[in-house]
Length: 483
Ligand code: SF4
Image (cartoon, rainbow, N blue to C red):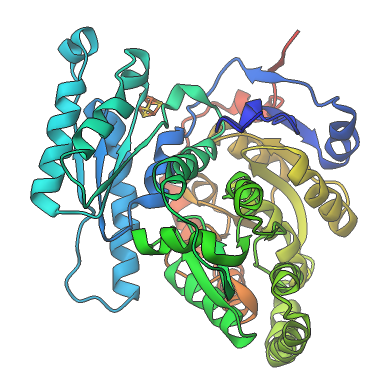
């Protein structure tokens, strides 16, 4: 059966969203299907999958975007737009542009009578204003519940605009609790409305599709492209700052690779099925051993193993003295990591480059792709606390108060209020990937550990909204197993 874009419904793996406990127990029980489905009886809110579809594409410069929703759903566009603008600065642009977004602003009347006419009007307006090569439509819970026929509207308007491709993306938030489903929705739509309608064209032997999530900074993208260039591979890097032309080149690549474990993995499988394009699905290239694995995975498919080995040896040697110094400053420090699924597990191995010890992790999902990463981390660090949670800060602060790590790596809003030194690897502004950027990241972590005054001062004046009794409670008490 073809993949429908809902991660919980994949045939080849269970996807766990709500679980907490020992990492050794997780690695032992998941293969036996014993982690079990659960839900939270109290939840502080989930990341909607629509935001992932929006984030993935909003930086495409020859595109316009129509969010078919009430106004609130389009709120996430401001964050994605900020990332787009930051990326322009790093690319040397002096005149910053905003993404070209329209929202249909569905209201109560539309929910009763339908909003297809509003959508058609917004699509025509997007074309009149921007003359884009492609218009993406993002659906929402409201448009899905009232069953607006978004695809028919897109087809009808597209008939008037022969030089533009209209691509409806079905990213209604209610469909999935796994926000990465939003990435899949975007890729499914690109396949249906762009790739399926065109000839694949001839293969370009040294071209590698590199699928990077929008949380990868511009400097990291450049470093990935540079590393591949050093071993003779041209990267077709997508979808951040991509174009319709780059999307059209996807079927011409000799192979594909993703730089995140939960980004484009289903899409790469589909490319292999349709166009016979092999893919490498290893790990995010942060930390030395992860970068080795990622680079070797891509190089093998492209017949560049020797070049990759020579390059890895050169880069490792170049950073060795700096890494030794960082290890001296960070060895033995305990660390708690949060972030997206792909990044947290990769960061768990990265901290071992500095001799740090992983004691806790909060990550959105657990599935069969993650199993090998958990086993690897267990082998490196031994047992650690694993919280499978799509945004649950109340569990995070409970765990942080109990575990008292020396360093917190992740979005720092709550940990800083506990006075912990914080750094994050989910950083669209700073370097983290590859060998050279690892040194930069290590220096950041070391600087935080050695100069914790700022967060300590924050903790004096900013309080968290929880009673002391919560910190005494089991952090996973609201996770209720089904049945
Ligand atoms: S699409 Fe649904 S879940 Fe997402 S922001 Fe809108 S109402 Fe919320």
